[in-house]
Length: 183
Image 1: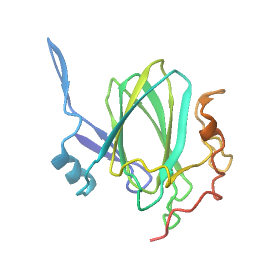
Image 2: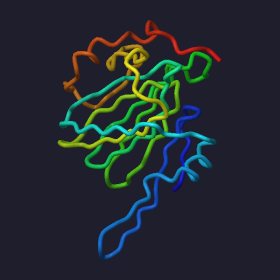
Image 3: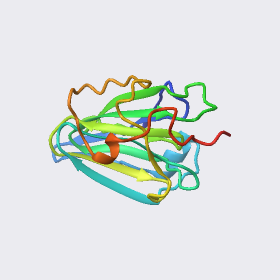
């Protein structure tokens, strides 16, 4: 597995080795020891989630506040997404900046999204299957959402009319959301 640091500190892209032979392919999608070496753990995952989305579905931008803040290790099992992460840590020099990357079932790249980032994605293919490994359980009392199309963030999602849930459509404007705690 190789690691690529993104311009947003703490947010890293991981590429697993894909082993091919006449039978097909084999990939180690998670190795706790190696993952913790790469991202400076120890980190432990307590919940795995899987979503299946139609092409054009946009989910996000979601995060959970402490004490239920989630780190997420995300990847695509089938299809592809444009994955977007926004730095919401007020003390970070990259506060309000976003990073986006295409994740797909060919390269099998993963993204480690530490607590302090809002996260979302748009499915680029019909039947896209997206998996999240989370460091905290889902807690609706701490869940927050920033509006996906907020002009202050200026995110180009690459799609004119995404399919967005009613809940995500009324996310908070960036800067007016309940703030991430300062260090």
